[in-house]
Image (cartoon, rainbow, N blue to C red; front, top):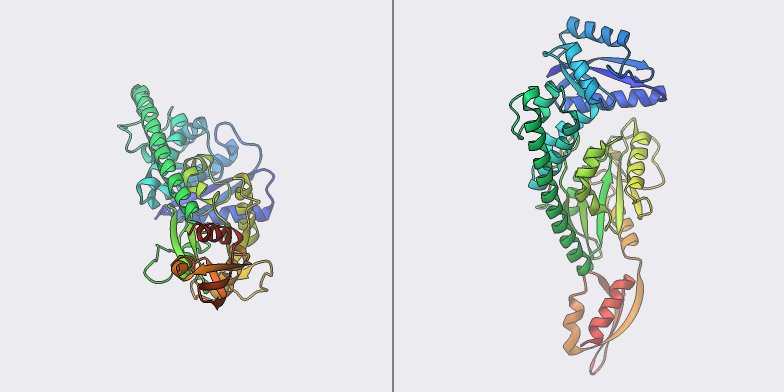
Length: 408
């Protein structure tokens, strides 16, 4: 682990918000192998050269030299001019980071699939492109894979052209990914199987919940770390009634998610648009539950999803001893506590039921069998030429069944 110091520029933030931001940034840094040994907070307008004021940044430099600190991390995104000034100020032995760079690096380390790697590389390069002039350490950390041989000014135009070309290629590949995902979504919609999407703050337990509901043999990676899931993952879940829905896990949210990441991960976040129900998974044990909940709700609103049906799922009740919230379902995905209640709530929202009577000749009974995942037979009356059945299900499923039976 490298030793790092966090430089926090505050303006209108309350003390509680500052403390939350600092704790979260420390956790983000641990995920890129930097251990925070000191924090420096200053409340002022941003300095155009150093973000913090000249006197305060001098104190930071003295601290860095005294404690042999290798990384200086800022809570706000640094401009290219500020990066250059700070790298010159601290010298080549000290890495200068901002929060956006830290999150980009975590995403780079987590990306596994081709789609994830495309999205992360695009976000990193669009972040890097306007910051080329004068970047030293930042360039070496972010510029790998695009033909860089060093930050020399004479190579700048060659590097800029290479970056522009690579960004264009990545955007084209990402459009292909989006087209492919759109095709899969349309196929799912035609199948009539409802879709439930998991949303929530990073490390709230979404992947663990997906594993608990999907059952053995369908597990996905679930780790106690930030952004363990970058790629959308879908699993079929069978409800106690025998009906089926598709459960989708997506990338975790975080407060002030960098705009470049939101843009790059648009193809992933679009999965949420066609969901019939969103499960907002909330870490009941987090001391910052309210802040994290507001961050998720804010991002959902930004994505135009605030009006979607949402069910709050308070997770990790096995490690919680306080008063239980009453505006959602309280569960433990890890210990599989109250999952039956959760499934009941999901079914009630996905399948608001109506009844319908049908007459089926004996030769057409096979058609009904194909629908038993989506409708329930509640009564059967056998006659000489066929069966009169009463079925319960979603209005749209009943309508489709009626059309299919009529076309017999």
